[in-house]
Amino acid sequence: MESEAPQEKDITKLIGDEYAERILSTTHRNPMTTQDLSRICGIPIAVAYRRVGYLERIGLLKCVGQEEVSRGKKVSYYQCAVRALKVTFAEGQFNTELELLPEEDMIKRPELSAKNAKSCNSMMEIRQLVESRWSDAHDLTSRKLEDSHHRKR
Image 1 (cartoon, helix red, strand yellow):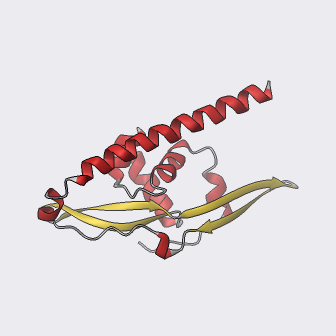
Image 2 (cartoon, one colour; image 1 turned 180 degrees about the vertical axis):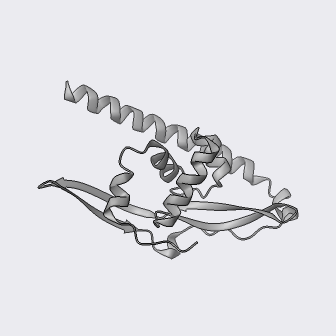
């Protein structure tokens, strides 16, 4: 899918979008399928497909490979394409600075046939690692939010 350059309105629309945050955080260094994102991040599957499509369309998420799972059916693996994103609000306007990962820094997933995929025993280990990293990232985000609430009081 050809992505368009993200506009400031696209990025500021994502502020406070918990699902987009989860998808980008989870896929930062771990390419994942939409189905896995739905399960690991606790996002309803239809919402996960819409968010992934939107994030890919505006260029913040990239498809880095496909895997044949059965009878020609393929699943796509997505990775966060953002190296850094800074959003500021000054003089009544949002401003964004976006730095995307260079193409060579993206984790490429080779196309796998269903036969090769079955012999790939490490997939379960990778999924377990991703689930534990998501849990760690989620805990860290929760602690930051709690800290910011305490500071405001």
